[in-house]
Image 1 (tube, helix red, strand yellow):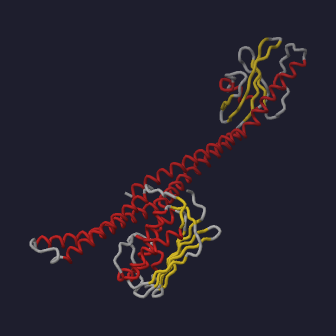
Image 2 (cartoon, rainbow, N blue to C red):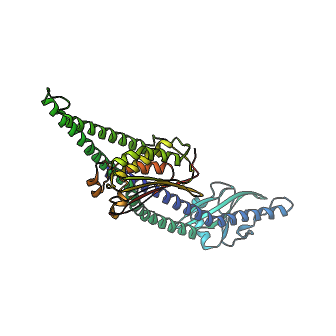
Image 3 (cartoon, rainbow, N blue to C red):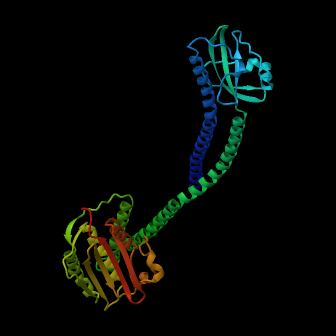
Length: 417
């Protein structure tokens, strides 16, 4: 699948580069052609204007044929005069002899416009017009040799074609490189999704297998009472709750990936929410012989999704309680600065290996020591990071093996409601 996409992206990128190269080459050629012929055109037109001015000076009357020595500004312009029978009047010059031998080619086809013609091995540009003389109408033709301009343009065209050929090769190579770079994050996302599906399947399969096995055991003893099978029923209940929690977390992450979940932000007291959470968790901590403390000396007003912030606190407290041994201490605190609100959960539990800290927010990731301390799915911190990101916050983790972990969420005070 990725190979076909790579080929398509390569072709698309190459086509864009080739079009740009073609436009650039065409622009250079047209610009150079216009610049080269601009002086030629101007000198031809000035020759015509010069002749018209001379004619106007003779009392607006008919002029005498002046032969090939008519006034002209550019010495490279030749003047040819054609009589009423379209015959070229003779002149003694080597180039004139060429015109005499090729009268059909050099004879003007249009009057009053710039035209190009090729005579023998030479290229010319001319302009012709008719004048009235005392012996009838004659056609005066100003001719300018443009061989050097033609050769320069042909050389430029060859260079552009060679450059375009090299450019096409470079475009294909660049297109392949850019397509490969563009596919890197897509491939990583695909691999991550595949891993996510694989891990989710594994996590779902485990509780389902336990529930199925325990249920089959119950079916084998139809006459047994609930009291007789209380352990099996308890296991089924625990695994069902675990499965329900796992499905809810998966659904939350799936919706977060597709941006289906929006934050319902409102103003509330963060310190008040923490007091409620500590009150709810005190009995659990006491039962586990752990100490839970709150540090919130001032009122902290927060604009956020209260339900999601509560979910964040639950995840962080659950992790702290799960990985803190008996007699341990968990400190929950919040404070505010001029621009930030800081929420912190600190424990003196088993800690996290330094190499695992960057991975703890990956889905289904669990440190080896964490696995031995308690059961979990490895989704909680992924959801916690998503909640923090949706509130434009940053998360910091400090941990040492055997000394404990501190997770700190820093939110900007200016939140859009």
